[in-house]
Length: 106
Image (cartoon, rainbow, N blue to C red; front, side, top):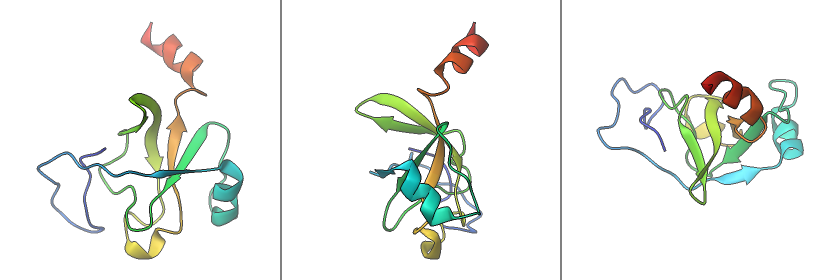
């Protein structure tokens, strides 16, 4: 879900919360698609959709699976341009960062 732009380069934000069903991309596949542009580590989760992606204003938004927070929007390629949907979007992996997060919340 997110409040980010719905089109690359758009200057207005949506008035309704946006959402999209995404597919998780395995880290080796995500790395293969990015090549040397972006290294995907164990601290990240990648997602994809054939016609949609993370866009400007979505950073910090949730990736939810079965009602549980599994990722936080971090980066994408091309800011939701249709020609960049071959590149997965990247999220901080909440489970991997749980100790760090818990230490900061205390």
